[in-house]
Image (tube, rainbow, N blue to C red; front, side):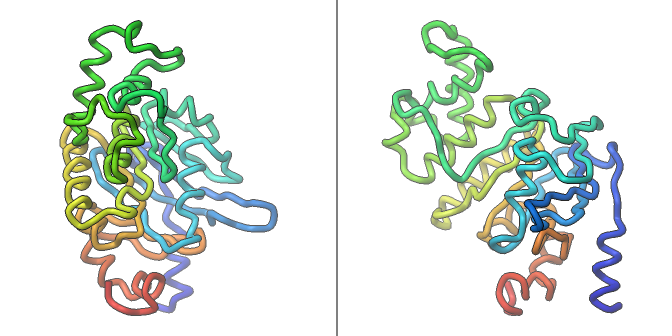
Length: 262
């Protein structure tokens, strides 16, 4: 099969609302004359950890932004838990059960770690720990323990190392009680041991019923975590499969490393 035929076969696949907990069908985003997401279709199954992979400029963040309601898509549909949520604003998507972490952290610097997590447990209200009640504080502390911050509850975000800030970002997202979480570059700047620790946290979340989509450039760390990978380049899908299939895919190797093995 020629490369053109392979591309056509990839693009022909379409999905319906019930093909996964999250479905994007023919998703498209244009900025002026630039096509950032090119009729992309994929489905994520409940309690799956999907790796969303691609080199810099592939369109990963733009896809995230369209799925979570930050950008309205130019075309196509997004379905979440069987409902058409295309273009629903980001704050409403959180209420529907979808959370997202960000590469750029924005914690409340004048609040402790546990208070930062507790804020997300009290949606649409100004937060004070005294007014939130003991149950909120206990739940926030439990979330902190789940992500590995149980020993630093009373520290401020500025006292945390980079890995701790990543865990705090996860904790704040978990506090919105999502069914699905999109995790953006969780391994950036981490040591091998820190990657393993964060991977264990995300695996634990899956075991507790959560579905995760993880974007990262650390291919080795990501392939050790995920069930399946979806690879894009220039806003289009180039490969999909198990971690082993993706690591050995010539198209992926070419996109990332000029043909060298991953």
